[in-house]
Length: 352
Image 1 (tube, rainbow, N blue to C red):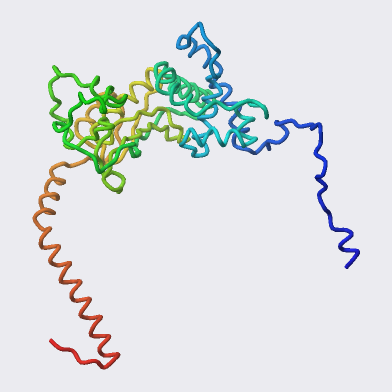
Image 2 (cartoon, rainbow, N blue to C red):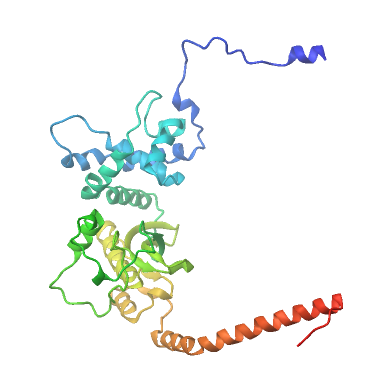
């Protein structure tokens, strides 16, 4: 027992070391995600300073390096850190994050408010994120990952930062009130064209959010009714590489229109045009199918029959009271069967 106690190791930390030999690059394993993508990110951000130079002032104090902020945002996307405040805290503590951002141990991490200021102004005005995205797609094309013969399109719903309990009809909102003048409201009002004729194919929204009027009132993806946006992806089928993306309100009409925008932009930017396009029934309108055929693209899309949908909706509304009655009778019969089984087991008398 005494021998075992003598062999038990104990850490001696009475005196801390005065000097350390530490190299951050040695601490990041080769299999780490950030090390694996670092070379591609470096190539994609090679001209980001030249791209953003016109949006910076020639006088004043030096700003935070935009490449540093973009690298931090990439970390947030890779690891699901949606809060910029949380992102700065994680970069402050995580060695791999510091290595990826080219930050040494004693380098200062930017304040979280710096991100929102740059996203709303410099990054948005310069469209730098799309520029980086297109450079990544060009790299995938150069590596032979994009074949360009078959594309697929689909949309996913992202919940807007707007309460679903405060939706109002557009005519009920007074936009001139000072509390309404947010950046989202200003963009919405600026996009309205008072002299434009209404589009007969696009129904006006019945409910909009006073804080984010561009968001659509939707119940897509089998979720609860909410305000949301649609993230539309154009994907090369060969290796599932996203070649374009377009955000829209979460409405089917806008999602179909965004497909035309993405196809045209992909052909203009990369010189590729698919021979076929795959999508679900939501894209199977006669007008969109005709547009694809007219542009030499074979649609692999189920045709959406609006008349059958209208008949189903009318039948559903007609049979709704009868369905509720049947469900109630079914519940009563189940309850009666359970009570009868209980009475037979306990011998209790039934009174009708």
